[in-house]
Length: 287
Image 1 (cartoon, rainbow, N blue to C red):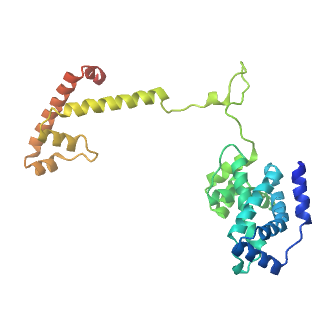
Image 2: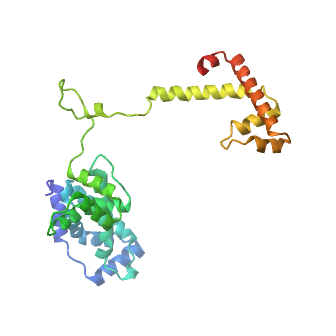
Image 3: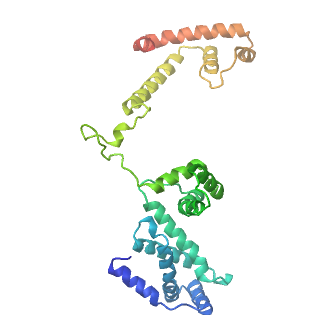
């Protein structure tokens, strides 16, 4: 029921509004579309508010205020009026039904739970049809297991069975806060206290990022100690994602692959000496 006076007044006004005949509706739609006649728009929307109220009542079991559903449906009604094409010879109520339902469903998905659900068309279909499909399948001659239910719904709606199971769990019980207290000896434990994350702590992530940046500066400085050929070999062999082979580098430089290996070994030694000379703490970190 709508408990506020404004809501009850709206419902009474909608129920008293006269129906529009097809020809009259067409004339009003043309006046609104071609002349931007606000009075014509008002008559169209008022005449169809009973449709909004009727559809809102079908979504009451989601626990949201009926008045809010009606308001959202009215938004959808206005959107339908803005997009309606009188030349298509379709009754406005037929066209508006989709927009009214879509507006209400979007509102329900945004407000039914503090945890956002899926917003794809398949996830919306699952949210709004799971209970109906469950009831229909449960009316069979024999009881149906959850596994069979999830499979049947998955096939009917084209969503993974895991998504069906997750949605069924969400619809079967209310959301639980991670800060909700749990019964223990001290009476102070929360659900959050029992969630274990394997990810690094924030200070460890920041520390690692700083270390990486510092080592990159050290490496750029040490690379200046190499000559052009040594630098190319190190870059191709050690600093490239692909990691060039000794043989391919030898062909590019016109030397044997053994010679490439020797130059690489010498360059690595020069790098180490440069790193230690410029940054004595490098030895401690390397150890």
